Structure formats: structure tokens, C-alpha cells
Amino acid sequence: MNRIYEVIQLIPRGRVATYGQIAKIAGLGRRARYVGYALRNTPDNLTLPWYRVINAHGKIAVKGNTAKNQLELLRQEKVLSKNSKVDLKKFLWDY
Image (tube, rainbow, N blue to C red):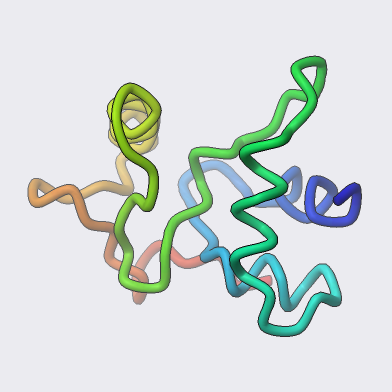
């Protein structure tokens, strides 16, 4: 999981990455769900820009208060449209 966290740390402000993209960069092939698992189990003492990780459709994949928090953080970085979707052509991280 450390490699996943290292990759997520690299996502620049104003950009997003998909779960699948993170998996690929981390050398995990197509294990996008494992990236989600790693994010859900991030140690409390680790600070990550977790909110910059979204699904392949440009949408937030989490629910509840976490989703509200992610929406707000993405809005602050001006990468979220009015319909709560990210334009991946414009904001996807080009690693």
C-alpha cells in the first residue's frame, strides 16, 4: 500500500487521478479496487490528497459525509463542475 500512497502524494493541486490510473502507476496493473481499499485503510497519521482520486467516469465514488467533504475540497481546487463531475480531458493528471 505504501506505493499507492506515494503515487497519490504526487497528484498536483488542481488535478485528479482515477483509481485505475493510480493502480497502473503503482505497478498494480488493473487493480483499481485495491487502490480504494488502500484509501479506506489509510493510517490516521498519513496526510494524503485522497480527494483527488476519483472514478474513471470523473465522479466521486464514496458516499455520505466523505463524499460531501471530497466535493468541497475539489470545488476549492476548481476542478468540479456544477453537476459534480470532473472533466477528465481537462483535469486528469498527466503523469
